Image (tube, rainbow, N blue to C red; front, side):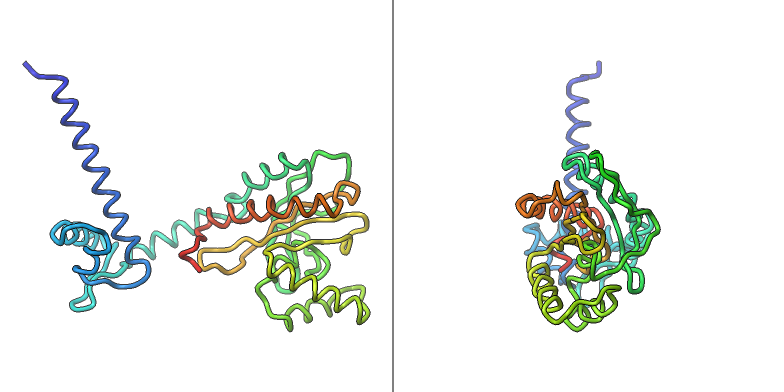
Length: 263
């Protein structure tokens, strides 16, 4: 007669062992993200025996997830490039960002935009309207100035001051010397703090807080902005919104593959 309880325990043990093997295999891949390691070094890094490490690494190498070279040891394999490309194709930016944009708009009641740098302008890819009785006159597919929009400024935070000046010189309404100095000083603050603002510079009585989105390599690939009428965007509220907008941008960035190891 079959002992059902014993059979279930055996099945659970096998499943647990399979899960542990899978997780250890993923640990092997993760350990090699910073460069090649010999078997001994890899074993020490993982805290596993040499034989267990060899078994895991060999299985991964057979599937082209790792590459082995004598003396150099193990490194990441070509299959990961294929998988990374496939993941990138599936992670279409608006689709990945959309839940975050909706959550941010629902939390703040304000309008949220997603955009990318398109030549010398900010191209709006998505928009989630706010719930306040105001109209934000942006539309999908529009291209807006960089220097006068919060989203545009967020897109260029990593650039040099010379680059900033180049975008500033493209403003439809040039600034005087005092205005230029103030704008550059604000940009320096924005770059150091990881956000940017539009203080009614692009549209009368409309203010916004924006933050950059980073790709897997840590570079700015897009940005989001939270916009509303000036009556709802006092200096105090904009200061409160900075962390909320930055956290949303970082969440999207992580979903796109960005992380501390990417920097």
